[in-house]
Length: 244
Image 1 (cartoon, rainbow, N blue to C red):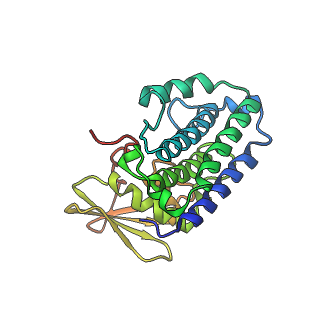
Image 2: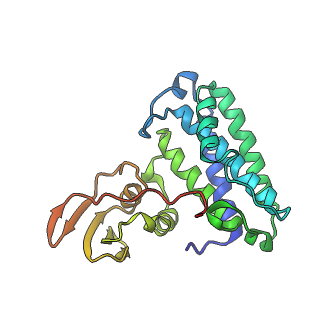
């Protein structure tokens, strides 16, 4: 669990949104069509998702303030997919407009919360507003890296990496215990399985791998019983949808 306060989280969100906006200023229509490392997704798909998740977070909070719960995405998982596909091919300018509007809506409603309102229940992972805001932070930082516009995982802060490692501990298979050995930092243990695998390297590379992204510093090494091994296959990302 991250120790940052609600006010600090709000600062992180504003900074992340500002960075995304700055990177999109010179984006051309041709740039939008460039494929990303995400299977089947162009930059346009990522941009559409950033706008869509901004509005999804905003509506979680808007309904929470009325004492109501609403699906994270309008129409559920199917609605999410449809909205992204419909908007992926927009012009660069239209993507900028949609994202700016999404940022204004989401950051505006979050910035107006008092401390008690951060703990209002939402449907996202059966959590509270703070959980939705943390998810939004993850989405903005990680998907900016997916756009490949000069802000890859190597730029992720220590604070963000440590938070993300904790969140993504759910991706470690039950049979494995990961001993993470980030350079110049204390070791960390993730998972409780009987088979121990040590993964060493730069903190950003370790975090990128755990998040399903390509490590950019080329520093990762995995060992088991003093022998070099392949990096373990991880479980899927924790679902955005509440357990039934």
